[in-house]
Image 1: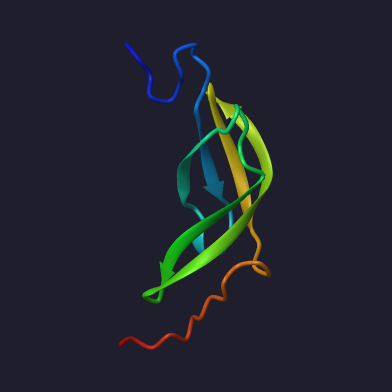
Image 2: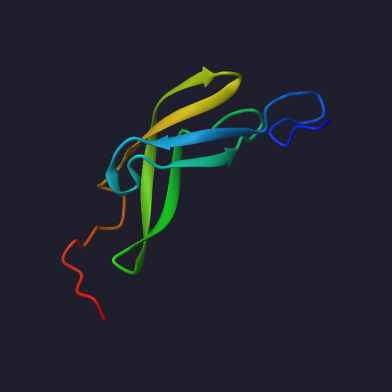
Length: 90
């Protein structure tokens, strides 16, 4: 039986990104490994107050958990779109 998280040789093809702070705190995302490596910096698009925003996250650390790579990412507020908490509903 094939495993969608591994290639034909059994090498992992996916990892789990964990967002430890910022607007995506507590969320996880399944992401593709590129040449067997995870990205040290990633962007995510999310809607905040009905507006799409781009948020940048930087790697904090990575670990193997039951054969699955998990990478924790911290929010880079300076490089991300501003979060307007005062957005009024339309």
